Image (cartoon, rainbow, N blue to C red):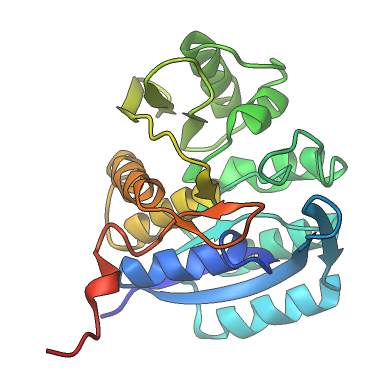
Length: 274
């Protein structure tokens, strides 16, 4: 039986992040992906690749969720950029109605390469309505600093402290993504299950082709849960998947470099003639 996975997130017109990244990842994991689009993100090549976010009507978001859940709960779901408070509440509504399990909350608050919050009014609602339901919550350093109220995180010890604070909000597990932020040759993430802290390390890859890495990581965790992995195994496997995707990244636009979602499974070798 093919497992069903859902992403409730924004659409990235550049094709590298958001629901585009999620669907590619779901496919690579061998799951059937559904999408509820909450907003559309565009980039302006005439204005230094500035990001613009156009929210989808909350009614349309709800109708998408109604369609998707008409056959009952999925095997796992994730959220990304949710756009509006109403979209957050509609998502919570369908989680409650269908007693949805295996929930990954990626608390997207800013576009890659910026520290400007896209929808700061959504943070409190996200903390109250969705994060407590999460099987795994996957903040990056900026998001973890905001959710934990610890501000700027500058060390692994800070990441651990933030993970513990976020765990107090109610999720089952927390992974704080440090990625390439610190001055070392390692990309470091911290996983906390309420009892044990696991520091996950991989060799840092010197590249600008990392657009979509965060969305892809959360989608990989989601697909891993759908296929029966424990949260920690899903996170560890997702890190391997994303590391391969970054290592084999591709130049698509002059302003932003994309990861290659097919790298882990060598997807470029598919459908070739003998």
